[in-house]
Image (tube, rainbow, N blue to C red):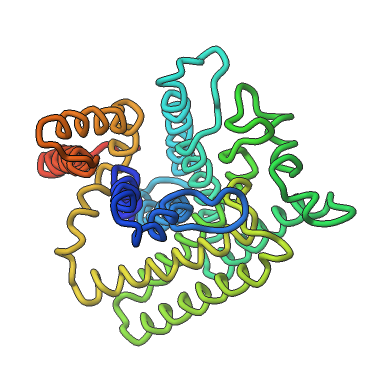
Amino acid sequence: MRGFSMFWLIGGAALIKEIAVHNPSALGMAVQMRHAGWQGLRFYDLIFPLFIFTSGATIPFSIARLKDKKTRNFQILAIALKRTIILMIIGVIYNEWHGHQFLNPRLCSVLGQIGASYFICTCIYIANRRSKGLLASIGAIWLLIATLQLLPAKASLDKNINPSNNINSWIDSTFVPGRLLNKSFDPEGPLNWISASSVCLLGAWTSSQLAAQNRKRKSLKSSALKATILGITLIASSLLADNVYPIVKNIWTVPFAALTGGISILFYLLIYYITDIKDFKKPFFMFKVIGANSLVAYISLRFFDYEQFTNDLGAQLSRIFAIDSAIPGLLITMIATLSLLYWLYRSKFFVKI
């Protein structure tokens, strides 16, 4: 699932948008390859939550391996905290690589939010890894976020959930040093870390449910059915709530977390059924290769200017072959990227934190 998420970032989304330039029938798909402006959800908005969900899904297995080595809980937390700090540092470097504003850096980042939500999820999972305990923790997080985002509204909810006036904005501008991505808030700010940890916990809950029952087919079906019902319930409830409590990615409202979490559960179950139950893995090998070095794939987006390289390559191809399209250059760039990731995979070189 990590590889599936990263595929769209390393060229998949750009390819769809470029196809739409020459084929108007693909415009609907191209729109889905951009973030929603404020309220609503598009396919591209799912990539980040899906990645966080997948990170959470690995936690039960990571902790189990550490427990087998007699690692104590405080040591596990120390490992998770170290991972978070490293990701936050890399995230800041990623943010400022081109702008070089290290004296006034943007401290919030995608990698920082992944690390923070992973750490929060690890703390909760260690404290109470039972099914009911994890679900109760998710509910408590959503209650906290909803209370903070909705209570200050005296006249209407719309006055509290908009780009210029929301609790995330107040927290970010008051407590976050450095530069914010937007004028009043940062889409990877501290309150978003907490909200994102609920999606991470949903990943941990789902994978632990399936792992605990994977030797008993009847029990596995029961666990899968339970997860399916939860996923559908989260999707339906968040869509129903949208008119009152909107789905907003920028400030990770509870309906956004619930909707993306529910979709992630169903997608995880589908992939689990195809690859683990039916053992149909070959078509997904490319995603496995990308996911094995997802951090390398993501960091390369900033340290190597793919967009500029693709544009330059496309211009050269246009001059040589009279091709009025960026698609050939984009495909060559994607193939080169995938070839590098495949070489790393074959060399068993994996960058993990």
